Image (cartoon, rainbow over all chains, first blue to last red; front, top):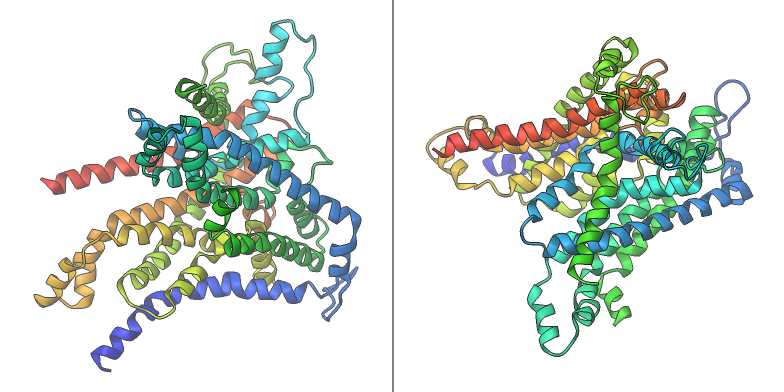
Length: 288
Length: 261
């Protein structure tokens, strides 16, 4: 074999194990569950192979599924909103602070290393019936017996915001950090107030980071089933809980396939829209 | 309204991020037998209880073995692929990168279902092998992203010097490239281990009955109610997943400082 031919083949030899793994463990399985979603579960024995639209019909028309889907999108949207509300000023502060920037950034990375389940369950210590808040309120005499604060939609959102906030702050920080501070100074020297300069210069320039953080929070939030299981009540299921129920509890794998594909399509469409339109300039123009 | 207000706001945001976790650590040292407030004294009894809890120790072993194997396989695949992507001009590089990153673009629940159903159809049901396959595919993109970022900064001319002085490509790789690559390999492996060690979303789908990892063990203990033992277990996990990277960074710094002299 010539040297050139070997040189040409080498990268493919290096790539093939990883590409093979992704193909075998992700791409082919995804195609497989597309096929599987048209099969039918039978009461006994293996699932019925074939082309049946029943699962899809149910997934798309069942009012309960639709309610959960819309509710999931609502919860993800509220979560994203609060992440932006809490995250933006914090990211702005980190960018503009001089002395302790490094420490603030390091602390910001820390939650990524702390287990998701620990961070989620930590709220039980705060809000549970013998948690910090109830104990404090009772010792101050505000209440005489613990109030039930946990296991509702609000605590699910709280848990999700707590989990996703670092993603938001990090994305906004990255885009704020890339903005030349001279721009804001120029605006103020031309007569804008600091607030005007922020609204008309810095904020529009940081929108790509805000959008990226928002997308990440939304998609990760909408795909979770652990948070509702730990911090939600029986009526606070999200769409991924339906998938988990179908696959693990009911063992209805064809239905579970259809439901997980529906989730993939909805969230995938969102990412596609983001890709298509938020070539970012579009978003900033709309605000200008 | 002004800088002071933003500072105060930021402090509150950081408190929101860390206070609940700090409470977990605090309560794990609580002497109170219900492990709740008020704190009655300092005690390590809950850590002793963990040490004597067979289920927890089994979960630890499972998580450790799974994390180490995941890191080993994922890092090997990831380093090879990153080498190809950074060092060679290959057609369709963007598409290949997208494919390799795909496992984190797909929601983890969907990945979990697809892998479970497909491998089950191939005859590999819920098992340690399925768990390992899932963790490898889920951590691979992170390893590739981390290693690629480090790889770009390694200068090519050192390798070219070795080659021009008569070393074979294989010799060059093991005696020049790999040592230079070590920090990237270590960072990738550490990342893979931590993500595997923390994972619950996919793990709950893939694990066979009776096998628990630390996160699924915590999850099943939560079903009863929160206990001081869970807080202690949480503290141990925080020490492992936060302490290991810090330790790794410190060691890397030591090594590079020695080399620098």
